[in-house]
Amino acid sequence: MSDSCVSDEGLEVSQPMHDSLPAGLHQRYALITPVRDEEAYIGDMIASMVAQTVLPSLWVIVDDGSVDKTAQIVSDFADRFTFIKLVKLPSRNQRLAGGEGAVPNALKGINLSDFGFLARFDADLIFPPDYIECILREFHRNPKLGIAGGELYVEKDGVLAPERNPLVHVRGALKMYRSQCLRDIGGLTSQIGWDTIDEVYAWTKSWTTRSFPEYKVIHRRPTGNGIAGTRVYRERGRAEYLTWSHPLFVLAKSFKILFRERSVARPICYLAGFILSYIRRESRLKDLTFAITRRKEQKHRLTALIAFGRRRPT
Image (cartoon, rainbow, N blue to C red; front, side, top):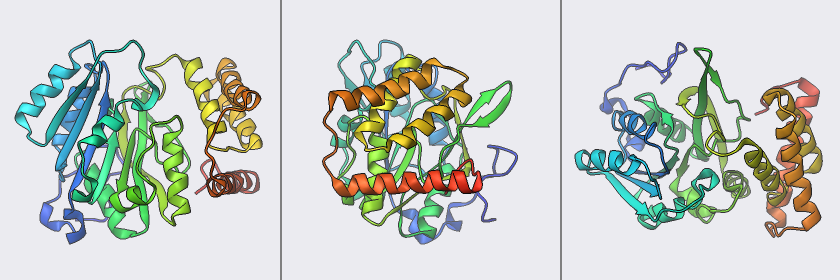
């Protein structure tokens, strides 16, 4: 088998034999997925996961109060695959961004010491059959890699286009953690900005984080489409404040949003969320090391962008 797990042409790849895997890839991994009213997506997502060349030992899917057929679809798969466990939460009126309300409930049913890795995947994704194997290979190649994932692609006019992000950032929709890294950072927080907080804490513990654009995952519902766009960007601005983003970085990012989204309302809401949090002096992480590490990484990205014109600094 070649070193490349995903072909340049797209998601269609051959399925390698398991005995071609290095010994380190045979470690067990657990998977958690928060869902709410995902009947249009969850069946295809599960189908792509049960077709993986390396299957999870445990998959906890938390239904966060769905009122459609989501729970029934998951239950039907759970009857066929014993590693799938459905947890149902009471119905509620509002969906929280990022599944923050459901993830802690999923983690309650997992003893992290039983697994070498933990993955947290959203319900609206489709994975190529060797995706997990590819990510595990990256963990195997780099013992200091603590958090890893591929890149999200959305269909635009019949063509798959990437939802680009800095290589040091792994999108919250498809994060995979080395268990020791997760223990070192104290687990996953449920607060807003969680998918930045985990990475910054990983850096403070000498772990590296990396997304791999060559491992393509289809994102069937682009980020934020399940929640009002203005609310999403307001909350993102607030998250920047809570996670100690530098004001200049936030300002630069607002211009990026303006040109990328071709929307005036979204960058305004983003800046408003950040500025209002400052005015209200909202409580944020009381960790000087975290703040210094966060702003150092942002300074590196801004410097690289200015000096080299890079679209995605490493």
